[in-house]
Length: 85
Image (cartoon, rainbow, N blue to C red; front, side):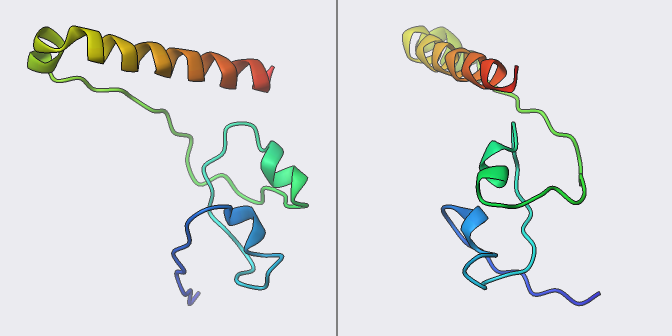
């Protein structure tokens, strides 16, 4: 199969409707945005997870900053898990 890769930023779900592409590869948590744009998942390429990696020195020298980031990630994760339930 020959394919042209078109790099886009922003709302990828709009690309097929605008005639920019027939297919998209998208990382999704719930798929609700795909459904809202009339798209369906045709294939799962891979199941992925995210990791936050913190440099030990940064954790020791800037604990308030790092703790803030960790807190925001936990809050975001909780919101995603609630939306999927």
